[in-house]
Length: 374
Image (tube, rainbow, N blue to C red; front, top):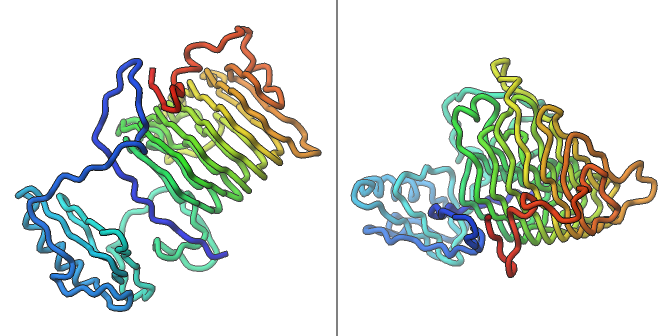
């Protein structure tokens, strides 16, 4: 099946410190302002032609080589006017703004000879066996997994996307076992909205299982998850360390999904035998609200770790239409939380004896349609 791979530019905004009670519009509501560069040139000055047929690789390379000289002088901007600019590979440089005017499209050449083979690089992990050749191109993708992987990143906006993938459509991660713990850079302040996600063998939206640096303060809203094995999944295992906390997911439409929600503490392998089996992950303060689902086989499966149970899993206003012949609606162990207005009724582990949700359940609130970090 032919897959369309969208290159998503994740724009990083300046860090914003949130104090208790401060209201936030979310990363996707920030208006991006570009600091003017003291030097600017147009790709036209280097002989580029935007007709969609002329190869402009040399023009881009020459322009960027020239602009490198301004790195210690405040940086520079390469302006690309409207047109279809066919090119092979070129490398960007530090202190450079690549500015694409409205109507400007950079086209990747389909000729393999225009893509140089890089020097041999070390390979990590266990590898993957696939039928046919091995590909590393983002022009044509075959058997690709995890279209958007946000790893150890902060202040991220992902919005207005349609992603149809074989495995996880969007995955948030932050390092693997002892290496992620040592590096210690979390994924935090992430805003995802107005996305349509499909994953026939994985999850539409996934957290982990590589999360040893921590994942926190994630706001997901106005999402459509469909024709997927699972909708929203939190993954981890012993040895990861780290945390997943302060997550709010709201205004979700699900359809034709086998497993609606899941959180598991028994998922993922280890890079080597040097990981610490006593490094237990923490999953805490995850709120799912305003969810409608049709043709769902299993509503949710929450299986925590005995030595480190998952806490403050909170469900509000969730209505799932379970398909006929479903073996069970909910599976829960080593978890605790709160549920209100949930159909089918959540498992006892998610039905607190307290008639009111704990403050931990409400660590992220919608206030007049906005998210507030408490």
